[in-house]
Image (tube, rainbow, N blue to C red; front, side):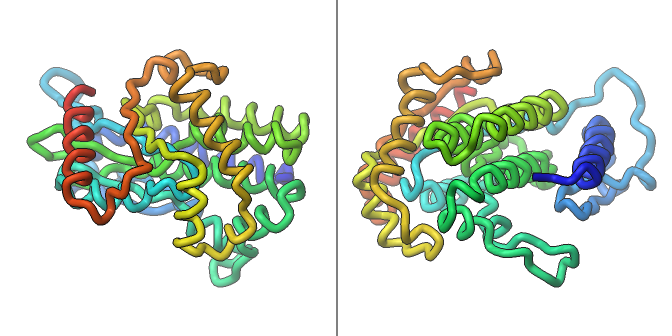
Length: 302
């Protein structure tokens, strides 16, 4: 659990970030007159000290609002990272933001030069002990990722720019944290606290992390299990097929059957592109072309 001091510090930093985000459009419009700094939490923020004050009104275009935000969702080892790299090479107007796995594998200690451990490994090694801690940190790291300001080339693109995230703050809650609660690895009190955190953070930052669409990479759990063995991530060596089957069912309930209880009306209405990820798309050029064509059409429709 977090101490009262650490919670207060975190909330204060998030409050400051929210205040700065209100001016992010102005700072981006001022181009080279603004500078980007990084907080200790790893969230980029704008230094407005040298930026001219934005003139109110008429004719000012919100460049950031042109960018479409889409998440790639799917089971463990379904091929999200491979597919994301494929998309990154398709169009210069698409930015792919990887899942923050490296942060989970190396938690910063009290000094940035020390490590507090590999939280991903700890979670898999002792799931009941570390699930709540991991899911809370996972949520915060995904939020940081989705709050990163877009690069200049996207802001000034003549086409429709798209930011593509590997998973999102939504799958963190409705897939992974929910699964851990249903499996008994997160108890009722922890689940209530996690949901309260999630709801509060989205109330504060919802407009800045809201998605315009979801790409669901869909494949049988058995296919994911085979790919999991091939990629050989050390922390996942103990993952069993029944866990992947449970995650598959959660994805189906959320994205196909629409039976998951969601707490956002907009999230319920999001367009979803379902792609067959059971096929071998990494080494087959025809399959890659077919999938990327569907993605292009999907992005144009948003």
